[in-house]
Image (cartoon, rainbow, N blue to C red; front, top):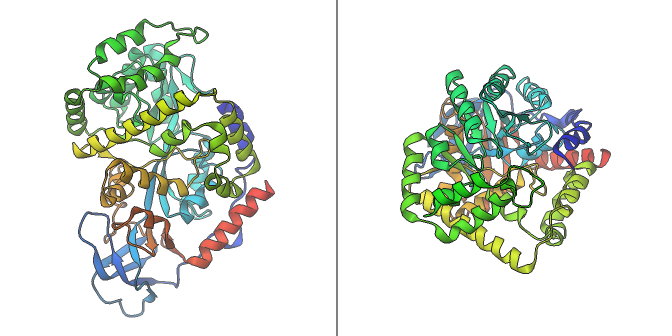
Length: 479
């Protein structure tokens, strides 16, 4: 099913919101004190035991080892852990307001970066900000800016300098927080997008176009590099030759050697000629220019699984009960439409994923900024729950649990430009927190052991979360 048809199909699901109990109140009016928890504030500082976090409205008043203020409503969290609200830095379909926003929140995700603009996504954000709907804070990208033939119907497909610049100006008019660049942009059109974005002061992020070396994208100012695209081509000892081969391939999508189809193979095969020296130079450039890596390991892992394996995975079947029927059908159709792969091909893709994990570890060791994102909304990538999968994969790649946690808290807020109000637990920051039953620094899987979520100052305890899950499931059935 095409992206355009997906949007038409799912658009009918976007109306309505969580009813009556969908906006649970804080434990009491006025000031609330969360006491006796171990505070992991997201800054990198050591945990503080028996800490108190004081909340009023949508803000944190104080955090640390202190008594609860007189008259405050006290919530005793003895034996539990407090972390900042989590960010998922690569999501889609937030306009499905009865499903995706509440599923993010109930899993502790209190901020998201929505990677493709729709008018409905902006409408959902406005409703959330007005307090009509409980949902995460949202940063929203533009409509896709792509080159011919366009990866998705509805994208702004550009070829000339004038078209590229007009697409960026359109993104600004439509109130996008950043311009979203995509795979098929030509090097020339991409450079025009970058220049116009710089002129307007609008960040740009997304896929590094297939024919653009990552170092060129970084020099031109791309803010985030999604999915590790182009990283092995650009760190190959044969990078110049590989990009020349791409440039020489046919531009016709009907041709078997079309560059848009062969790019994946070249990227995977470039692992064999990986150059640590070239990688080191690229990582140093990324640090200097402030370019972020958003690897979305969970979607890279799932996208290359055999369709039957993916469709019959009990761990993936269970959360389908929270998805509207149309979403489930679209996901299953998309997976079944993927070209079949032989056992040898599957083994090669598994080896490639392991190589991608090694690359993430090397970037972390080199000091490259990394954020946690999932591609939620893609086939069998679940809003909320899969941010925790991503954290586990970052640790599997070699990041420490503390480093992985910062990729979804402090560093994510920095990447989103919201570090002054989000990402850590400190006075003046948003009252977005997660209460855990286990220490995430000892085992990152403990981020799944959620006791309560504080979203926009609203305390969602076990009963509130159970009700929200039930309401999302009921909405899925009703659809």
